Length: 285
Image 1 (cartoon, helix red, strand yellow):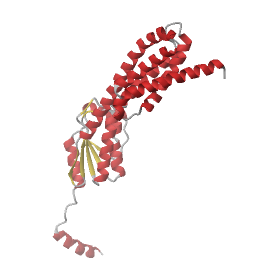
Image 2 (cartoon, rainbow, N blue to C red; image 1 turned 45 degrees about the vertical axis):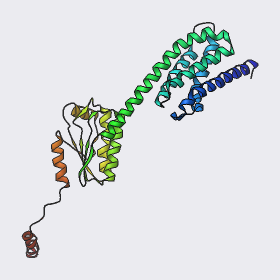
Image 3 (cartoon, helix red, strand yellow; image 1 turned 120 degrees about the vertical axis):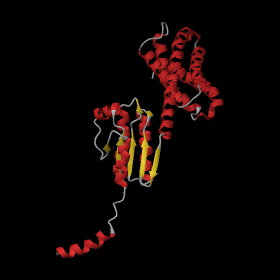
């Protein structure tokens, strides 16, 4: 390896070390957030490597080139991932500030390039963090919705599951998993799945919900899907969902009636019929 390569590696390692120190100081008040400062520094390292290459290639001009575009992407991705982990924004911005200070400290001649770069990088970090927070909160809301959606045992062996409101594919998957667990735990014989009040329903949502009839069939239960009308019916028809042995009807009331009939015990034979049946059988011999 050339002396220049050794020098570049040492310079990069020196910057990474100062970045780790800066992240450690910023992270100390938030040490219970789940990620250690070493984890955060490791997530940030790809950005430092990319931006170091970009600086070497364009230090005499505005930040540009393939390495710079990679560095921008890495900065956005870092902040997005940290938001998903619930890391405090102060720690995220401290990582970028630590990189800036470490580079300028190593060579003050880098200051103009670094300042121009940071104007763009801080905007990207804020955008990535905001998007990550939005997605994290959306996921949390979907989980809360899936947990709150009614799944009730109306009588022994009879389960009612109501999928309603705004539900995305991930929320539908969590709801289907919850219903499947209840089918097994309660030893259900029939399941009524009410999908009539879903909002903004998509084929992906219905595909996830159709895991319920599949699981019910596997566990020996029958499924009656009610509420298949209007937009919900159009989505189900266009999605081409395979038959899983379920009964599909437009009204939930009809699904409830059919499910009760399916679970009802056979009618008791009157005693006089039971008495006559053996005699009739003997006469036919």
